[in-house]
Amino acid sequence: MKKITKKISMRNLVTVKTVGALLVATFLSASVHAATGDDTLLVQRGKYLATAADCIACHTAAGGKPFAGGASIATPLGAIISTNITPSKDNGIGNYTLQQFTDALRKGKRADGANLYPAMPYTAYAGITDADVAALYAYFMQGVAAVESKPPQTELPFPFNVRLSLAAWNAMNLDGKPFVADPGKSAEINRGAYLGQALAHCSTCHTPRSSTMGELSARSLAGASLGTWYAPNITSDPNSGIGNWSVEELAAYLKTGRAGLKAQAAGPMAEAIDHSLRHLNDQDLHALASWLKQTTPIHDAADTRPTDAWGAAADYTGSIRGVAWPADHRQMTGPQIYDAYCASCHQASGKGTPDGGLPPLFNNTALGRSNGDNLVMAILQGVQRQADVPGVAMPAFARSLSDEQIATLGNFLTQQFGHPAAKVTPQRVAELRAGGVSSPLLKWVWPGIVGVIVLLLLMLRFLRRRHS
Image 1 (cartoon, one colour):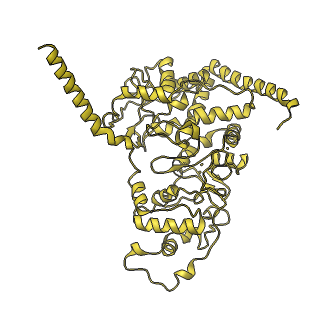
Image 2: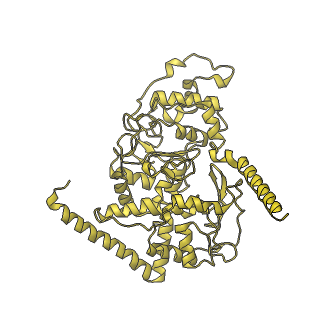
Image 3: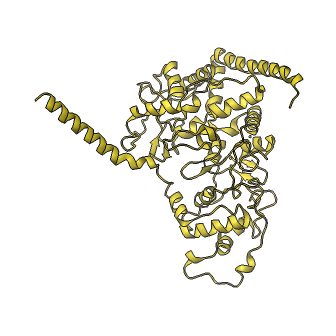
């Protein structure tokens, strides 16, 4: 799964709801206690919450110091440079009050009142409780080392560099309300919902967006393109989503990035697991998995079977035995490319190794979706995990294979081992190699500039006539 890829009788209904409400109250009470207890415990609690929120992933540049900013976040509107959120008073957030810190998390407002870009998922963080905001504040002010460096400014094209324009976007897409537990759900489901909706901000990646880049709530968690990698459907639908996964499989995937032989994390999802999810305790991972299992199912008509139920072992060797490679290697067949670059690890049959260290290609979610972008990205960029994560990494082939070769290989893999509806074209490979397609909003940049100039000229003309 990307950056997963979650009846009782009427007689017992009242009892269940009552118990659920008591458990929820206990959970919320524990959060408040953590926020009002010893400072050391509060800072430790804040560190755990910051890990659950994956703050370090965006606010730490490659090879840089933790939370010092400088990471370039690719968006369809251009690169957004993350800021320094260490307690440096000159370069970070050291002068923020608790209220200003709260406004940044919930309203997307900097201390100077300027709007933050929604690459910072404040639409999700708005759900963080008061107690947990206080714990996060304590951690960033007392548990993080100040770094005296200032990252470069974000430079988006006009009019997107006018932060005031985000006020209209916020009015359409931000409710700013803290999470409210559902007394009709168990404490575990409520905990999972709180983690998934607020801290872990699952919808930020896994929910498709409108033309104005706001989340389409009617299709929450139904899958979305991140420009390059595709964050798949993680609703409870058994074919399009994770409905046929067990809670235990989901929890294991969130902790390790692997779910038996059928799924291995890559791209942004692998980063989220390595930086954040694997550090959560087992109870929270189980709660998050349990919540996902009961989300509203959203189905794609192309998915006629579960993502891990496509393909089968096959032997292609007869089609290439004794056949010379073409003089132009861009004309190699899918079996030829597979034999040259893939078979040594995944085997000629696609079975991989028995322990799954080198995973099978059939009955694998990596090839079981009608969207083939993640397959292409895995070929281009490989699959890399942090050094302390066990497993075998997949090398990148961006420099070894052309767009035409990757398209040929991708179509062979999906037809042989995966979802046959997934089509890979050289044009799409080129787009993904280049970082994805720009937002259609960018086409309004020059018309917007011209419009502003014309408006200013008209206003100037009006004022001159008025004073003549």
